[in-house]
Length: 428
Image 1 (cartoon, rainbow, N blue to C red):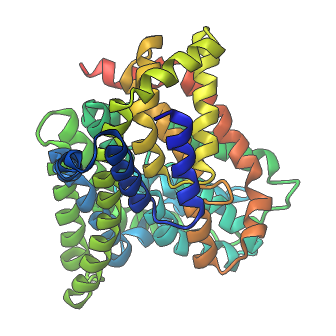
Image 2: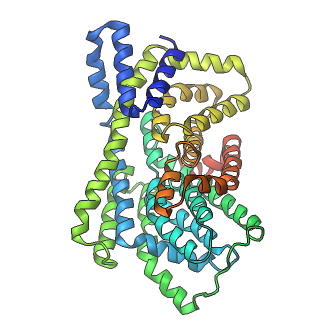
Image 3: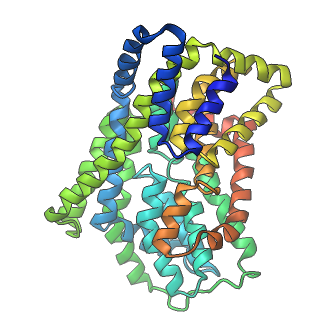
C-alpha cells in the first residue's frame, strides 16, 4: 500500500473528528488485514502492548504529576514573584517576567500545557492588573510556554528518546542552549516593541529587603531543577527516577514547606494527572503498530528516496523536514506528529549524517512552535480559556514571537553545536 493512501487515510480520519489514537489503531488494523488477513492481527496486539511498556516512558506520568503538584502547591506563584524581582523593573517588565518565569518553570515540569494553564493563570492576571491588553498578555504567555518542553526536563524528549533509541539524559542536556535561545529571542522582541506598544512600567518596585524575602521564599522551588538535571548529569538517577523525585519533591514542598497543598487536594491532582498521562500513553500504544505497518510497507524507504529525488543538498532536505513538521503541527497534536513521522523522517536525517540527538532537538522545537500556531494550537486554547480571551485576539499579537522562534529554529537546524555542545562537553 502506498504512502499516499496510508497518510491520506490518516489525515481524513483526523479531519473527520476521530481521536488520533483511534485513527492510528484502526488504520494499522486495516493495513494488516489488507496485507495478510486476520492472522496478522496478533502482531497488532503485541505491538500495542509493547508501545507503552518502555521503561523510559514511566517518566511521563510523573513529570505530569510534578507539574500539577507545583501549580496546586504554591511553587508556581513563587517562581513568578522571583522573576518579577529579577527583571520586572524595565518598560514592559511583566512581559520579560512572563518569559523568565516560563524558563524557570520549564526546568521543573517539562510540559508546555502545564506552563500555559498553571503559571499562565498567574501571569495573565498580573499583566491585566498592570494595564496590559488581555490579548497581548495571553499571546506572550502562550509563546513563552513553548520553552517548557525544550529546557530539561521534557516530556517530548522522553518520547523521542523512546522512539529513536537515544539517551533521554543526553536529549535533556541538548535542550539547554536552544531553550535559553528561545527565551532570549522573545525578550529581544519585547525590548524592541516595548515603546511602540507603549507597554506599562511598574510603578511600585520592591525594596531590597522585600526582594530578598521573595527570592528566599522561592528557593525551595528553584532548587528543584538541581535535583532533576544535576542528578541526570552526574548519573545519580535515570530520567524515570528523576521524574519520580520531582513529583515527590513537589508534593513535599507543597505539603510541608509552603503548606498550600492540602491532603484533600491530592485525589483531584492524581486523577487529573492520571487522565493526562493516559491520553499520552494511548497515543504511544496505538502508534507502535502503526509504525510497524509503515516499516512493513517500506514507507520510510519510499519517503527517503522521494526526498532525495527532490533535493540532494542536506540543507535543502532539512528545510523540507522543518516545513513538513511545522505544517503538520498546525493541524495535529505534537506527540502524534512525532510518533507518526519519526519512522519516516529519522532515516532521512540519519542518511544525511545528522546526529539523532541533534535531530531530536529540531523535531521538538518544531512541535513546540506548532503548539501556538492556529488552527490546532493546544497552548493557544489553554491560554484563551485561562485568560478568557478570544483566539483571534491572541493570534493577532503572537506573530512577532512566532518569527523569533522561527529564527531560533533555523539557527538550531544549521548550527549543530548549539544543541550538541553541552552533551558533548559532559561526555554524551
